[in-house]
Image (cartoon, rainbow, N blue to C red; front, side, top):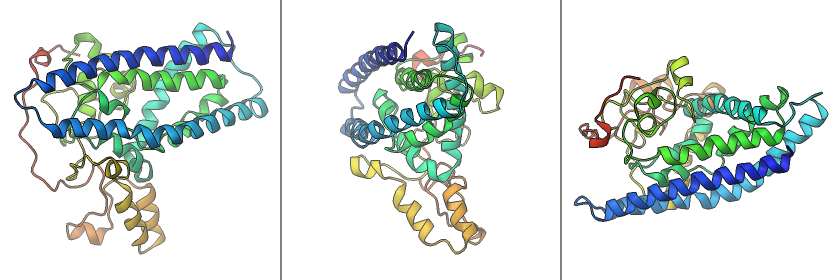
Length: 318
């Protein structure tokens, strides 16, 4: 096998998952149009989600090209050997990328600087397939850094890029409410049920189910949560915007204000690399929050838990 073959394989898999996601999205749109609770705001939110691909694709064309070039240079100059490209190497590479994605994803939730980008993905109050492509424009930076160790472990750059693409492409179909619980698969894979939990802003669901393809990482590292009632989706703070431009930069204004108002190097550092929701003790004592991430105190009353869809009510022990 050659790197060119692996690149073509990545394109083929990406196309397959795109078609699956497009089919689910079409069903979601038709269902929404004929629903008694039809709301135009939901469709405007879909448009906002799709619009994030404009800055995201422009950034990723440059970032991924640069990351791949960097991977190749490091592999050629600093790594004395690489795995041969075989079916088993590709399979192992996907599993390794999924493992590193778990930690990349967890860091994106717990480090404010990276949350400013990943929060875009979590800012929708809806759960449909369009949310699967709702990205911050610079999310690829953390991804490139997080997967760099795989190059030092001897994985060919083309295999690492394939693994990154495959893990992301897989997640296209899990952003939906159309598919309920899937029995034993919920115990192994990141399924729609497991991922709905991840997008919930209810206290019990926050920072849970980080896995990309496999949910076993969450079970191993203590971040797994079963879907028990339909989550309230979106950010913890009061964010309801469907204006694409506001969605693109939703976290940045407050982030830069906090950096500007930092009263010490430590505060500046914590606003950069502390968890979302961190505030100096003096602000915390007065109830003031300086962050707009998931950990911030809610400013609106939560909606009462909704019952799971009929298809999701069948409980299967994981």
